[in-house]
Each structure stands twice: as C-alpha cells, then as structure tokens.
Image 1 (spheres, one colour):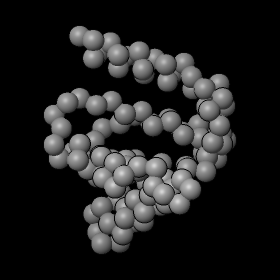
Image 2 (cartoon, one colour):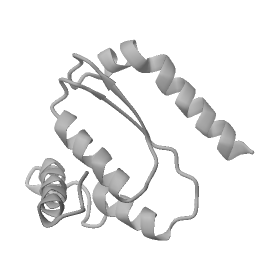
Image 3 (cartoon, one colour):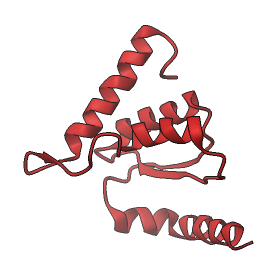
Image 4 (spheres, one colour):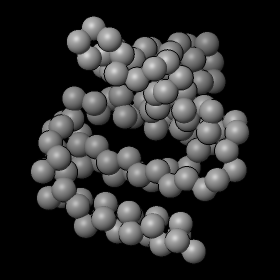
Length: 118
C-alpha cells in the first residue's frame, strides 16, 4: 500500500507525477493542477460526505495497468472504497474491455443511477 512510509510516499508522488506527465497534450497540461485523480481523491477523502461509487476496470496488458494499480492503492490509503475488475490479457482497448466486462460495467452504472435517483 502506498502512503505509509517515506518510500511509499515517494511511490505515490512518482505515480502522481507520471499521471501529470501523461496529461500533457502538446506540451501543456490537459488539466489544471489540483484537477487530477490524485489531488481530487485526496480532497474528496478530506471533505466529502457524499457517497461516491468508483469502479476501476483495466486490462492486465493496458499501458496504464501499473498506474491503475498504484492509483487503487492510493485510494485504499485514503480509505476511499472502490470496486475493481482486472481483465486478463486485455490491452488499452475499449471494445475489448466492453466485450469482456460490458454487462458488468452497465449494471454498475444502472445501480449507481438508481441510488442517486432515490
């Protein structure tokens, strides 16, 4: 788990910096500082009382696989609950993800919408 020892905090920081690098678009950030998944998760953990359902779906061959594992560990370190589905052998490909887990993803969305509508 990230965020417990100095070495683990460094790993979280590296993951955060990697995400910021990946957000670069033509040499400029696509998202402003404080508007990325790490900063927003930290803010949510500190301030929010609203229920939030998170479902992380990633293929084991996805170029973002390791970054997703690190982000899930970060969510755990903040005590933010989430569900996950790792799809073995699937790369960064929406069509393949939905072929393998589309029904599960749609059920998650439908359940979330029902809870919000109540």
